[in-house]
Image 1 (cartoon, rainbow, N blue to C red):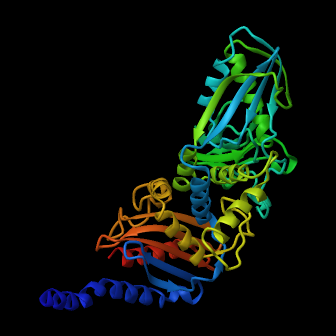
Image 2 (tube, rainbow, N blue to C red):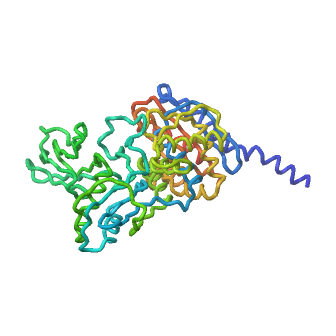
Image 3 (cartoon, one colour):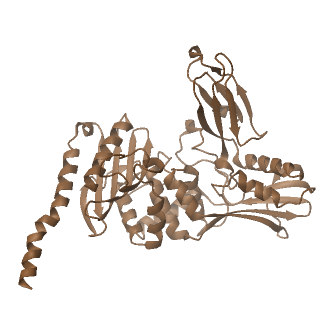
Length: 450
């Protein structure tokens, strides 16, 4: 027994050596000249030993950007449950059809084709109604930047969304001096396209693909010099109208005549003839893996439905998130969360708040299984695909990235060389070039994984 105790005491300094080496490495990185102008918060927690390994400016408030999606996803998974679904329903009453949405952010053309197929061919529909009573009429979040419109990452929020509320425009050069070729997906008469671009003519300047958003128009203009294949995702003005127009066109393609389209609630006597169910895990996957803003906001609205009646607001959903942080996690520090995606300029959280959320997730197996497997894998998938392709951190980190002008954030889990799983948060702000900050963050990940 005495010999065993002596051996354990002798091994203690060696067991602590990797932690000291990691701390020294991160200390050294914090002396980098880059940080003369860039703020940094770094927190690292050993989940196996249940101990803090490193904490630097953990309470500093920073705009989290898309890393906020980690908090949104953890709270939604715990509060709503892994079996929760986002439903879109089609009802029939007399000669009318009613489509009722509950903000499925992943509803696509294939789903719409299946919905249209539920209506017998040869039917005549007097009116196709859209029931948009699930949420309020505010189609953007508080603090969203106005000139992010008309890009697809800031869609017009609605209970009825198809293809994320937008279209993808692909442009390819043709013969020099001629108009380039283009495709718009999905095809619809809801929008129109003016192609004023020219192939391989440098005098025309940069290629631009924009919607006439200042006019609230769905006219897409392609202008400038096209030298290679280029894609742009654009939002459509009035997402629910876009959904209705596409559904009417799909019904027409299967021999169903729709005479008019309108908005209205589903009558009590209506019969449901089709249901599309989207698993919560699919929505979380897209929010974390591809940093999809619409998916994150949909999670927030569904959190609002826990305690509130329709029409629901984004703020009611954020109330659930804020209460979770203050209540379940016991966070007393002041913070600001006003959306689910991190788009808002009003969001401010600290590295400590993010870290405590991830540690909490790890202690709930059902939640952790969903979150961990859906975070991008370093050097392999999602927004981490081009990070840490060489070195100790390759395939050892699952993390969410966040980037807005002047802010670069990273939070997730890393496997250390001793086999321990660590939760980490790195928040940087005040920089001009995000690419240099990402390289510095990757060096921190190397230190953790070594």
